[in-house]
Length: 122
Length: 107
Image (tube, rainbow over all chains, first blue to last red):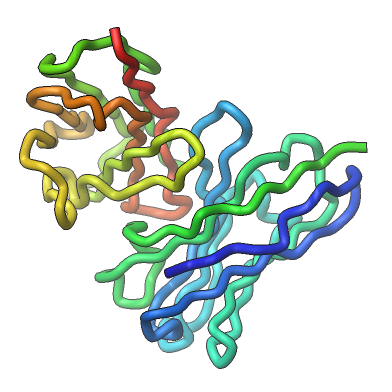
């Protein structure tokens, strides 16, 4: 199971950190991905963080690469999405997700959290 | 980045209808194509992985094929629980882009 938290109403230009905790599986064995969905829009892949054995490296969508950072704390079973310089276009539901069979690389997403809502508004 | 063009963006159908949704990749992605189902207010669920493989517990009325860079999801006989939004995603290269989604509505 995955559970996101940290969604909030924030003003444009501010920062926010989302958290995703996993249970029922060996967290450190899985790469973690963040996906968002603006109201009434489609899914947008934001980025992923590989497992430590795969280098723990990150990949990002171009739209967020300079503003968002994904990190993980395997000892605490958390993945994080640090978002800076938030814009109204960042409003939406943010999901963390993971999957098997990727060998620690960015995976096919067969397990999703329920999402957390971020609203960027003055 | 690889662009995924999904069509149609929406369709209306009746229970029992056979429907087809298409996703086209902007370049070759081999078989690295997944399909997800999402219902309002819920997280997406994986339906199909690697172009044509049904995920766990997905009913056999769902099927999917690949022809080059064109991918098709078919629901053989639409059931009431299938009214949802369907999205494709390529996992050939990062960023793992999604198609725009297809909303399947009740006629």
